[in-house]
Image (cartoon, rainbow, N blue to C red; front, side, top):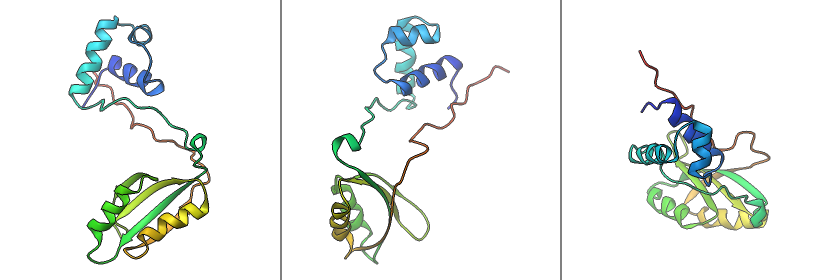
Length: 151
């Protein structure tokens, strides 16, 4: 779906700070507060804005380690492994992918011992390959916001 420049500016403002007031966004975009409110409502209706969230610092909560785990369920265990991943709260993201692995998941833990404990829960149902995250040069970000141009 295409968006115009005002929508792009609104989305960028909300990405920077989802708690920004309508008045602040309106000043940034050059529209009225009711105009910004209406545009946000339409962006939500179109499914472009799905919600508003807080960016949580895992380390501040005591989760000093992040790991990326490639998970390959054993034959006949796909749905069991998926349910297991969904039920372990330390898995904060998971993608079902093509290729040799079925899942690529990100998890956060306080210690290596905690990581071992979580991986032990899936060891009899799947093969795993784990990498510890050293840094995150690119944090989760939206795709480029393509602006509709008049022709």
